[in-house]
Image (cartoon, rainbow, N blue to C red; front, side, top):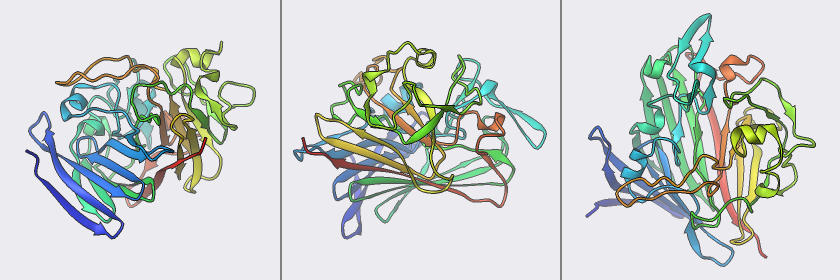
Length: 361
């Protein structure tokens, strides 16, 4: 039987802490459930992961709109999808796992063919964070020691999840004692139908971006900021995901669909709209705002139905979409991209908000 502790931290919301199992190294894992008007979000300390987000559809029926597993063992066994996790130190890819800072070259693990993905073989998604209930949410803290996965500097990370009026807000704060690179993001897969099984290809997506970063065969940016005009990457007007995903386009073929970074309008550090998603069947609308310069739109191309955990749960291709607000992939190797370097004495802060609403038929 699970012991739970509920703390009413605000008149309009609550935070509940529940035991959620034990990590492979024996560390206890906790689940924090955040409730506010129009939203309930559950976050666990293993990977600081979003386990569920429950919101109503246009008829008021509440359902979970993110993919994941019903128990911890599914997340531990699944080493490829990163469901709901905070990924780092470097979300997305670094070419050949190599980068230089102040003339010194660093090598980090290559775990995605020849490249490094989402921090390496033991990224932040595989670690147990320290959780602390706060007003309307939970603060997750992780200290990554100097040399962790080959990255320089002891990095201290605080990630705050809070809920308010149908929105889940994520605030990131990072500091270091040596120059390093960092690019944190959340890797939730959204399925606005709320059933976790239907395709997201009929969802309409709007991405207010005039350019994107094309990739090579290893999904590493070429360095070009290419216009979306006249390509299947033009989502400046709401368009069904599946409308052009099978077009005869080299970039789509490389990724097996969409798995690219869009260059958002507006200045880095300013709040801007990153995406809007609409599911016509449920009426649910997801609006993403961020202070980050880019968003990785990924259509679950590598989901393959593999089943994990004692209850054998799996997720099929294109049953979830990711909107990973971020700095650009492989930025340490592209001086023209917004820098991901963090220096001692600096405090980096970024914010992303996922707001849920409904649209009438």
